[in-house]
Amino acid sequence: MKFVDEAQIKVLAGDGGNGCISFRREKFIPFGGPDGGDGGAGGSVWLVADEGLNTLIDFRHQRSFKAQRGENGMGSQMYGKGGEDTTIRVPVGTMVTNVDTDEVIGDLTAHGQRMLVAQGGKGGLGNIHFKSSVNRAPRKATPGTPGEVRELKLELRLLADVGLLGFPNAGKSTFIRAVSAATPRVADYPFTTLHPNLGVVSLGTDQSFVIADIPGLIEGASEGAGLGIQFLRHVARTSLLLHIVDIAPIDGADVADQVRAIEQELQKFNPELLERPRWLVLNKADMLPEDERQAVAQAIIDKLGWTQPWFLVSAIARENTMAVCQQVQRFFESQREAEVERTDMLPDDVRLRGELPQG
Image (cartoon, rainbow, N blue to C red):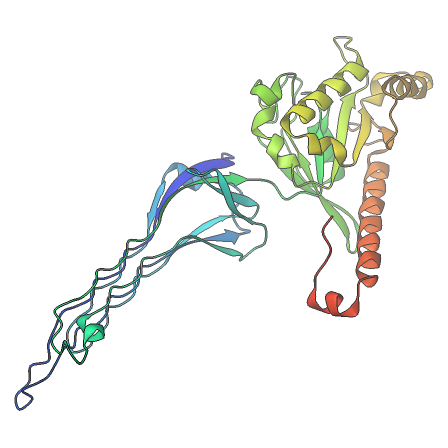
């Protein structure tokens, strides 16, 4: 299936039905009075997150969604039937933005989560509501209000714990194949990965995390060059970034310069990405003699002044790849423990309400 992570749709809620002007006319009841019923409410449009979907490709074929109009009111105080809602299924991880105002309406991050994106119109009032002591036969009713109409931008952001960064051919796809059951396409030319791939790394009972293979970045990606800018958004949700680098580039490029080039693209796209944990994975160690690997790696680390964790691996030979995953698992476990301690320190009344401080 083709991967589509952006779509623009139009949603139209149903209009409310009109109120009715009617009078009760029955034999032996000379002064029946008004009995016009109200119009029914228009149907609304909802988005619902479905974990069975993993792409927005369906919106390439249907871009407009309309809810049902409410029925008009009728005589004998009969109210119009409300219009049926329209429910649109989207993948978990979809962010919704109002195109006209550029306002983020919400984020669907859990299976079954629902979001109202267009409110149906209200039904009009029938003339039964306008009866008074001075107006016993009102010939007045109100029309239903129109339903909301919105242009929405849907943006799918993968829900992954770990995101892989790096230039094309750095070995990201090979790495994800080595540590998970995912089978992304691998070849010896740039841009093999044309869409993100997700893999689940399982290290034992209740020890697993989701890793995302993000298509390679090149210089100028944040301005639209190459494929990377299309997928940089997918690292926005990740808690940890693994920056994978080819330690022995065939073209002889400077590895430290390549690392800095990716950092610049992250800075331009979203400076906050540079503030989250980012570990360096020096890949393709098998391309160097065993007695030189550690020295070459240390020289790169020293040149970068790298202070975060770093690893020397060979993804294709699966050397040291699981050691990286074990360290990642410990990172997430320490995060969870810190969160539990943070919660335990809260006052009892706050903790019982489930309120957590921000930041």
